[in-house]
Image (cartoon, rainbow, N blue to C red; front, side, top):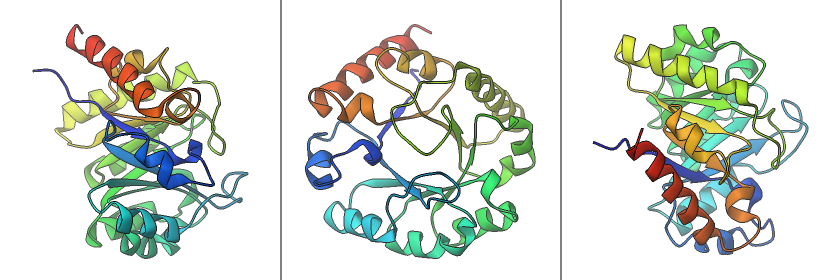
Amino acid sequence: MTRKVLFAPSLLSADPLNIQASVEKLEGEHDWLHVDIMDGCFVPNITYGPGLVSALKKRYPGETLDVHLMIERPDRYVDAFIQAGADWLTVHLEADRHIHRTLTRIREAGARAGVSINPGASAELLRPLLPFIDLVLVMSVNPGFGGQSFIPETMEKTRSLCRWREAGRHKYLIEMDGGIGIENAARVASGGADVLVMGNAVFGDGDPAANLREIKLKVKEAITHA
């Protein structure tokens, strides 16, 4: 049976003056919408807040909203983003002193809990958390801005997470974010990623739906023949 890979276009690369048009240009080719929340402290950029998540959920109630908090002390905002409509809520290991408590709170509030790790951090830091999460987001660039180049060494984290998932009979998904496009999406998926976050590769040049269809075809071919 062919393994299912999910595709989550990042709205960080959508048209900031017309996010609705960007979403609709996807023509339903995507699985999730990835929403990057940045505070200018944890990362050197500022993006959106709960208001955008709420607007997306009201306009597109059937969409799965994959919200990635790149902010300091994310525990302060968990409830606000879940109430706004986040289906999956991911916080950074490096940004939360009480990460277990925050992950537990996310689940208790009715969302799926994810933990993200930056390229420079060891995947070993995640091992105590694996029984308490639904998703691990492996950053394949240093977070903060779109359009960066994929860091190949981050694939080793994904391979480790695959081994640990099998050994521990965990059920978390492995998501990768950063520098993923037509030239490497198949390799990333074949390496174990279950969810691919892509920004410029989808919303950059050309038609977003066509771009995504082309990437999906390459990924399907790769995992079918793996």
